[in-house]
Structure formats: C-alpha cells, structure tokens
Length: 370
Figure 1 (cartoon, rainbow, N blue to C red):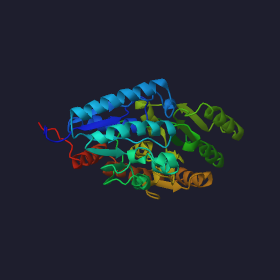
Figure 2 (figure 1 turned 180 degrees about the vertical axis):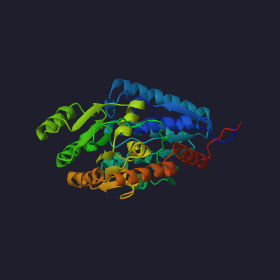
Figure 3 (figure 1 turned 135 degrees about the vertical axis):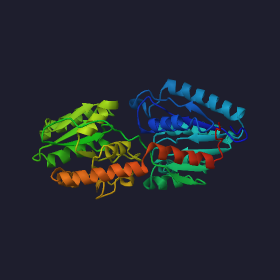
Figure 4 (figure 1 turned 30 degrees about the vertical axis):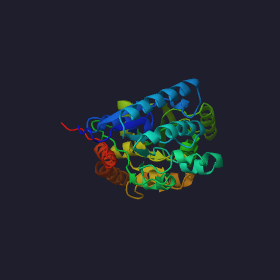
C-alpha cells in the first residue's frame, strides 16, 4: 500500500433501507475496498424508506456521531479525500449536508460528490438565504453523475471535473419463465408512489382493458394515503383483475417476476429521479422497456431499439407502445435481446466499479498493493 497517498473517507448510507443509492454505495464499497485504501463512515439516518426526509432525535444524535468520527479520521489521516453523496432536494437532508460539509470539507484535501439524486442545485438556488450557504457544496474537486440528463444540476456546483458513471448490475442467469396463461404480462418494479407514475399505469391499463394484458406491480407504498387512493381508482375503473399489486419482492422471488413478464413498464416522473436500476434488471432479463422520456430512463432506453420512450403523464402514448409490443412477439424478442446486449456491453457491475475506481485514482487516492 502506498502510505504517501491519501486515504479515501467514504460517507454514505448502505442498506437498510433497501433503495438505489444505498445499494449502489454498498456495491462500490464491497467492490473497491480491496483495491483502494478506504474507510467507510456509515450514514444510517433512516431504517426504512418511510423515514427518509423526516426529522427525529435519533437523526440528530447520529449526525453528531458522524461529525465526530469523520473529523477524527480527517485529522488522524491528513490529506484524506472525502467522498460524499449530496442529499435530494428536501429540507431535512439538505440541512444535514450543510452541517456535515461545512465542518468536514475544510479538513479534507479533496472532495468528491456522487449525485445519486437530482434537483439539489435548483433547490439551493431557489432559496435565497440557503443559496448564501451554498459554499458548503461549491467547487468540489470531482463530481459524479449517473447519466447525461443529470449533468445540468451537478454543474451548478462548479465541479473541477465531472464524470458520468452509470450504475451496473450482475447479469442474472438460471431463472426460467413459469408456464402461465396467454395473457401478456406487463411488470412494474419500484416504489408505489404517484410520482413514480402508478396512477398513469392505471389509466394506461384502462386504455388496454380489452387486450388480455395483466399489469403486475412489485413494491411497497411510499405514503400511507397512496394505497387507498390507488385501490379506489382501480376499483372505479374496474381493473381489480388486470392490475395486481404483489408487494415487495427480493432475490429469487424478484427475478422470477422478471422472468415471467413480457414487457417492463416504468412511467416515472419523479423529481429526483436519476437512473432506474430496475430498467437494467429488466433488460438483463431480456424484457423490452416502455418508459417515460424522463431523466434517467431516457439515458438508458434506446427508443425504438431496446424499447419505447413516451412523454411523461401520457397514458395514451404508453398504451400505444404496450399494445404494439403485446401484439408482436418477434418485436418483443428483438428489443429484449438488444437490451440484454446493451447491459452486457455498458451496464455491468465491473464497468461501474472500474469507472468509480478511475475517479478515485484521479483524485490521488491510495491504491492497495499486494
């Protein structure tokens, strides 16, 4: 190990709860801890996704603990590089970041921001008093974003360098499709929330009610009021038999849902959306993707090649794409194969790790040697 080069101090949440950012940071730490001289400072502010963005006494005490540990490490290992995932555009996590960064950044030789969520730059700029504190985020040595559609927000912080590093996944093998009826199965995986497009999914299903299509939603409700509203709307449209919510799935159960599906549907219009790992999972299972032309999906889905992109909030356009795929098995197969090939070429776990390692090495972080 080259002791003359700085350590990498990684601040970041790992599961629980299970969500994209936490999984990506854990994957990075697990994959690079044997290559780079890094120390992880866990940020476990939320035990479940329902805690995200909420203030609590345990979060205040945990914040103090993180500050103490981070400062101790930065002082003990002078010249260390600080890795930090800036918060989404929400008051509680933004104020948390302000406290951590304003105190810790002066002790770090360099700062690397990894933007897993979108909208922070505009959130700060739109609030005059908070924008005066934006020096805590300004001019990081390096910034990492997940796709081209996320660059604009990161550039508001004037990073000295910017890298586009999409997530990657292990390609799943060995899960076979179970025999089922002649229905076309359209799968949605993700948080069940209005901003993820689940009510647009209902309207899309309503357009396709005579097409022998079943919609399956895998995930849990983000807000307690969403479930009764969703179920009431589904009943109003008479879609109880064709729109099925199956709850949370993981591991082999989740892979089986993908294996049994014909089409993947992701109609998000989530304000902080940056990627959509579930799209990669679907393409790895050779599913054509119908998604909104929104930040994240539009960086992954090749319109007309691996699936179809439609304007957000447009059930008619979504339904046209799903109908076309449902009626054309050969098209489904061709697009599914193209998506699988794209995954193998661009979105592997090793590609993600190598790209992140390159970012850290360019920041002069110490590389372990045998």
